[in-house]
Length: 279
Image (cartoon, helix red, strand yellow):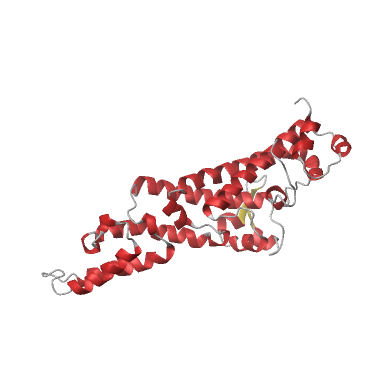
């Protein structure tokens, strides 16, 4: 890199001590690359916040509640005798302890795994979701209740002959909830199709509840057909943060002089704490 100091002056909007950076003996070229990686991570995080409701910059209380998820709470350590020791973050940190880069990476890794699995199921088993345009979490139970009510009105031998007026009332409500889903109206003729699709929405509802503290709105992703893009950006953010730590450990002192501290993920993702300019 021809002149890393000149590039640093363009990237770092806060004042920095060039002599102190030199004194670390660390590579200024690698420092520039690391700061550019921070900027890329911020771009992915911003996209996720704007398009999914998910805010990667979690607050300590939000992260603490996610420790109910074993994959985030527990880590394993293998000693020389190959004995495995499990460590619980919940036991080791307070509710207001700062969130580290490693903490957030654990969240991103588990969220990516689950959303990617859900996306693959959608693509393979539910390529055409007929209710997707208007589906939301609060409608899942309502649709299921409507299906059960209609099945109960389908009398053996006579069908809906004696209960047609009651069935039509259920169907009118269903049409109000999903006015564009013309392929499944009237509902009594598509009960099996809708019930099959409802299985996917139940899975979505479970995932949505699990990650609700992050602000993720999975049904919004289903309505806007952006689940695949969210999975891609989660992957990019997670990979970017892993690369940042892997390479940044070689310039850790310099990064701290610039305000970036791996023990506080907010220094990476919060523009107000460490403002950076793409350069």
